[in-house]
Length: 256
Length: 337
Image 1: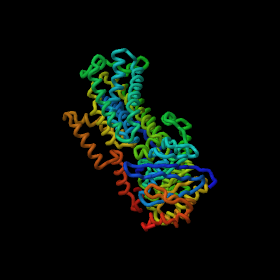
Image 2: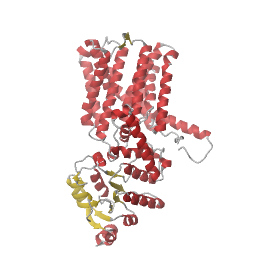
Image 3: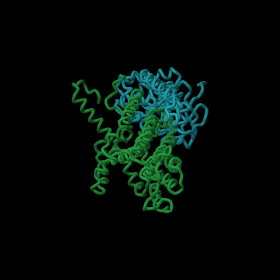
Image 4: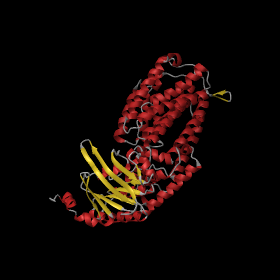
């Protein structure tokens, strides 16, 4: 583990009222890694994503991204600095086409202001055109050009899952957090998503993957973090984690 | 890529050009309206249609696109009217300069309301604006030396251009035609831009928006201020057109009716406010014989829209278009859903 740490979490805790969702968590994602985060329902995986992305305030512990403490950085600035994510339940924007949803992904990498927009400055028009081309290319890469003009609310759940990945990648992230990317997908599509994840990782993007499909996690991830009740119960290479007695007990309810 | 899915209100280049063309055609038709209008009364109504369109289209930006309920658009309208009207009637300030001051005042008020209220997610703006409209109504009524109080502000001069007063219904019609046309074009430019796409995400989910790099607070604030500026322009046009202003025109009820008209037209749709303004202008005139019946009609239409046509008149038209197209095309799967 001599490679550069992209994301470092130290002593992170978060509770909702009396319920502890994340407790004294430490972990590191190194650049170029696919890091799996698994655990039973309610283990705090999505809360962890929300803390890293800045949707929830991280009050206890520290989150470092590219060496900088980002606890107080607003969510939208974290996107600027290189984070992107998808959502467990689809969060596509209604009243916009699939293409426009992916175009939104480019938001952090473009600049045109309110005034330029209203006055339709040449720079703004050019930017919209280039963003549209980029978004269309991103959709094409996932074989989804046929959906471009459809309303985001009119596509299937599985298609939405992939569109969300395309949208996250349009932000040109260094770290992408995928929250159950294969949940609700038919079997054939799961393999497709796995291919996508491997490919984006090959392009140098670090991946945090929350996923329930164990076969996918075991085959994709370099490293797995196992949570239960917000605590780390195991961390390491897939073949090690798989045999960990505490992990088995958390998943199967056996006595350790 | 020419055959867009039926009824998909998307904004992409091709459709962007299409919408601009539609706007140009509509405005070209409106250009000859005074020539075919049977009498001045109808032209006078058309001027109110333009003013209402500015109000409803600007409110649609806040409600339809940013998902924020604002209940003081009537007060911004009134502030614009009184600021511009009082300056001209009491201090001999040129109506043009008055209009600029009116915009400054409405924009600044929106900034003061929005800074605290828009920082939070939820219905804080609705509550803050509710209070603001009540305060403004009190001020319009009580600052009698300036506003004339409940009796209204009289003696407001008209706009004049190159020494010619814009007083007749027809000349004012063309003036309003230009101003409203420019504003409608600017609104469309906004929607069809990086800023506009960012703005349009807010109605769905501010959390998802911020996870994509959109500073939701900043976007909401800018749109709220821009919307108030436009209401200020509408107020200025109104007061220099009828040369009079009275507090009840800008009451809380006006604000509520404007919200209702955004919904009835179709919120979050560019053309929705055109239908909203048409209804808001025509219905009270048609029901003139029955005092206050329009309040009942507006209330009922809100209920009907919420129950049956969540996308308003525009959504209803789209549904009807879908039925007709389906009825006249041979069945080939369920395309065009």
